Length: 120
Image (cartoon, rainbow, N blue to C red; front, side):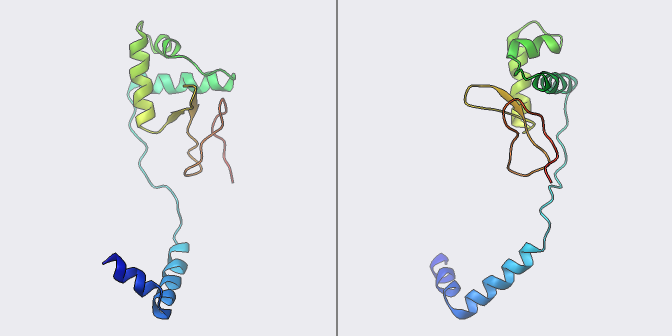
């Protein structure tokens, strides 16, 4: 089936159809209409803490996150960070430093130790 499609797209009619589709799809706005993920109270407090620390230029450790949400165990901090990573609200670089995902642009992420800013 793919071979037939590739052969069709190489014909003049296929090229014309492809160009019409491209012009139609280019008119569709790429706004992200996804519903923001629901956050538990500890996740909300952790995210706020991480944002505040990143404004200061410091990426918090799991132990610091755990203390910020009122827990003693660094494992609790790790669980909350893992949940925020899975929900796409934060990312970790290669050195395990936390950063906040830039919600204003689709695949781009904020550079290390910077908060999301509106990029127009």
